[in-house]
Image (cartoon, rainbow, N blue to C red; front, side, top):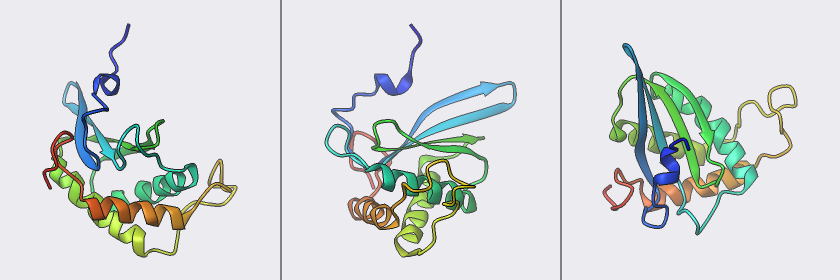
Length: 152
């Protein structure tokens, strides 16, 4: 059976919110990193679909303004956070600092990109209000640089 890194993470002992380097892949000179951007405590809370969908749009556009080499940002199926895939080497602190800037932007924005039927495959399922409320929760708790300890 194939190894899936996130299935080996003890979801009962992590302490969200946090940023975690979840894996790296190297092919010759090319390095790809996968980051776990955990917003909510696993098995205790989850993002409603409209909030996670809106956060996905806002993160996808705005994190690229602060970080080089983003390939993709995708919501976790458990709806407790996002995975971010990037080219090259970055530090969890660099990722966390950019995420804090973008979450602060989300709290203040009145615009969600790409929410028309032409641009989005489920354009009716968005909630800027909910996205902002969850961004506030993450910011209030602080984003740890360690998934098992609250190191801010």
